[in-house]
Image 1: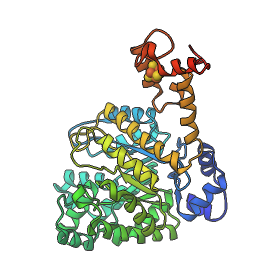
Image 2: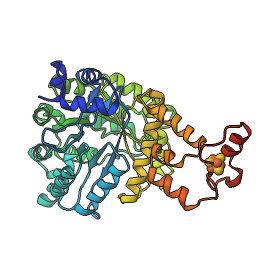
Image 3: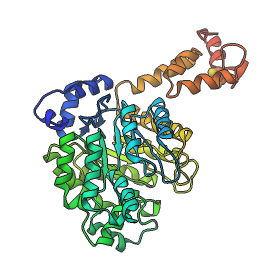
Image 4: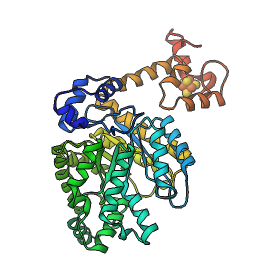
Length: 431
Ligand code: SF4
């Protein structure tokens, strides 16, 4: 049985208990959230070393880090190092988006090494294999696509991005729309190229029940991909994006009916004033399925700093109800990320997630900030490091440019915390 089926029977699984403990919430709330489809626990029955993680309503906002090779860079060692860095930085989940090298071997190594949920986009492997075997992505067969999905599921992948909403109807609307950036989703582009070349409907849509059967067997959570997501502010919230979202909403209901856990992916590039509306639209059309947003990026012109661009968008999105933030690294739009980019990307998204969790009322979130401020007032640097999102950096920077006394070198002997404490007659604890 899948976690959804167990929850609907009114039973509590070890995975639900683990999520409840990690989130400091009642296990019954987790069970009910899963039963209602508002929470997913991506937990493939074959991912043996998994520490379960919940995504959805009432739970802390989660962060995903994308790693994986490209056709030019990376191998098993580089991707395992990125995995290590991502987990050390606090990523809740990791997606292996490898498109180069020995893709199956890299994936298996990542699953074996990760206690956090692993996601993939199986059509990448099917497309790359088709190029190697037949010279073109468009020559992959329908069975190639489903065989890749089944292989990922069998090996323990916890959630898969599947671009089921890229239909012939969506392509027609795309043509009529006249976008600035037509399609920026790699998986979406694979499917559109295949569909146009072969003049056929999307097999992930046409044979959705086949996909559901695989997902149910291994309890793989479907992450319904947004192949038509806007890749520029000019294309945000256009008819093409919304048409796909309507289709995804219908597919959410079919997945739930089949006992399959499902979440929905979202944009993309979105101006600040459209973010909340996008979240509300998704929650309404997709019946409160957990929303997994890619950014969103709030301007198109900050290449080199897009981890910041996406953290701004991610904070607003999560505050409005997005449940899962896919990180963006400083090398977005420029190059495949290296391990340093991975760390920066995870930290930026964690800041966004935590900022939103404070106002979402997630247990312990606001309290952590209060304790940090109290530690600042006491000039308690150990406690500040312990409470910080990046303890290592806090300790290192403070030590590197130290000052005499208990203050930091920002104000040195004119430390406001210290001076005011003296004048108020409440000496800072460490002075
Ligand atoms: S020196 Fe300035 S920045 Fe540093 S702890 Fe004191 S008030 Fe804060």
